[in-house]
Figure 1: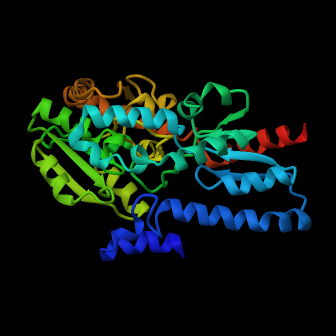
Figure 2: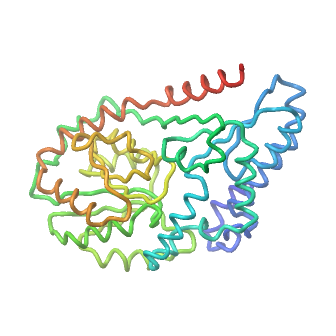
Figure 3: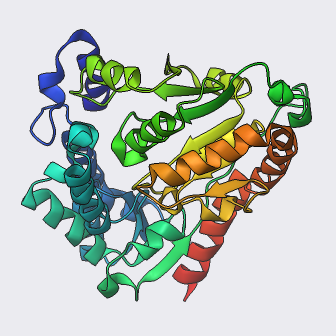
Length: 354
């Protein structure tokens, strides 16, 4: 009920109920409520089933883990994004570097001491930590490195057989602008401010930046319109159902996500599956997706100049894009949800069997 309220109330103007940490339907309230309910049911589940461990996610694990330890169970912690100390340090630096975009960074930089203590206690209680990529694992504090650590990259969507292959995309048609796509939360955590700065640096009429996403909660659309107006040829596309996002991706040429903090942005593999080469930072968690100059390019965080350089390379080498898109598609296909789940299940089975 709280999660439904969290999704619906802002749409009818009742954002007060979802305000960070304090709102009745905030994500924090949703997580704490679910965690408490799971903890209350745990002893009964142990009596009814052969339970040896519990599996919980960041911000929704403390009560469950505390009860599990009392029952002699192992605690498995799924951390979908960089650990809070790493993420918070990067975001606070970002708020100072780009104060105009600080309002888009979300609640992480405003987390209370109680919430941060809760996160730390969750990690302390965890026996196993699962992350979607090496960036998350590397973000853990030194004292947690002795735990069982499992890195399992997400799977990619499959491309339907009836879709035209990447080599048939209209990317060689230099008569239309090169279309660079950004998909995600419209936040500087995802580097959107840096991407817009790169487009301003290039100032090319043969380039179109398409931004698809949802404005951050409590940030008015007028803020984004003002930012978009300062760069040439920026087009905003509202969010839409997943199948339609994939369909729209096929109308674009290059995908760019210059994130400052992520776990592993699944949208990168979605774009690759639709035949788009990438421009991404290591902090997206997707360094392994890049074969430099083959499936795309890695750029450092906080570098509009590096982003502009790679976009310009695509502008100057449009004939190379179809082949790069094909290689991106093939590389993304190596990552499947079956291999993701099998890796986690087998690693946990081996651990719990000891």
